[in-house]
Image (cartoon, rainbow over all chains, first blue to last red; front, top):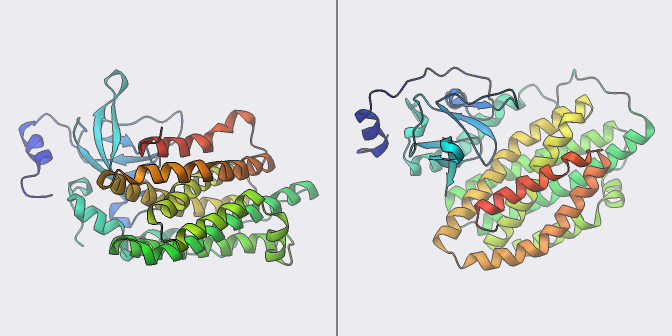
Length: 99
Length: 257
C-alpha cells in the first residue's frame, strides 16, 4: 500500500464493504505467495463472486480480499496487467485495462 | 520481498518491478515445469493415431515450430533495443521460454516418427508464417522497437495463445499437455506486449500510425497461417472466430478498432 492511498481511504470510510479470506485455488502460473489472488475461469457454469473480476487480457479471475467497488485497482500478475473496476453494461462491475 | 497483505495494494511501480523480474519468472515456472520431461509427464501415454491424424499433427507442429523459432529469435534480438531494464530482463525470460517451446515441440515431432525435424519443418511449414518470421527479424534488425514488439508480442503471441488453447482441448494427451504448458508462458508474453505498447502509445501517440502500417502488413500473413492450422486440427467453423477475436480485442484496447 502506498502512503495516502485513495483506495484505502475510501475503504476506511465505507465499513460495509465485505471482506474475504482467499484460499489457494490451484492457479500455478504465479509464485506461491500470490496464488490465492487468482483462479481459472471455469466456463459457462462459473460465476464471479463480489470480490472477483475477469482479466480482459488473459481471462484469468482476479481476486481481492474485499468486495470490489468502482474505482478499485487490481493487478493481474498472470499477464502483468493493471486493472481498474468500472461499471459496465447494466451496472455490472467489470475490470478495465489501465496502461 | 515480504508477502503483501493484499497484492492489489502494491504501488504501480512496485507491481511492474515485481512482474518483470527474473525472480518472479523463476518462481512462476518452476512449479509447473517441475517433474516434466520435454513439456509433459513421463507417464502420459501415447495415443493411437491413424496415419492421417499423425500426418496432420506433424504439419501443425511444424508450423508451431516456425512460430516459436520466430519468437525465440525475435525475443533474443529485442533485448538489445528494449528501452528499459525491466523490458530487457523480461525479454531474457521470454527468450528462455521460447527456447523451451521449440525444444518440446521438436521432441514431440521425434516421438511421432519425424527423423529430421528441421527438414520436415522447412518442407511442411506455411509460407505465410515463414514470411512473417522473415519480416519480424527485419523489424528487429531495423531496431524498430514498437513495430517489432507489436508483431511479436501482440500479433504472434495473441494468435498462438488462442490457437494453442483451442488445439489443447481436442489434442491427444501428450500434445495437449505440452500445449497447456506453453499457453501458461504465452499468457505472460502477450500481456507484456500489450501493456508495454499501451504505455508507449500513451506517452508517444505518434507511434500509432507506425503500428497501423505494420498491422496492415502482418495481419494477413498470420491470420492466413492460423486459418491453415485450424483446418488441420479440425476446428469447427463455429469456433473459427475465437483466435481472431482474441487478437482483435487486444488491438481494440490499444486503440486500433
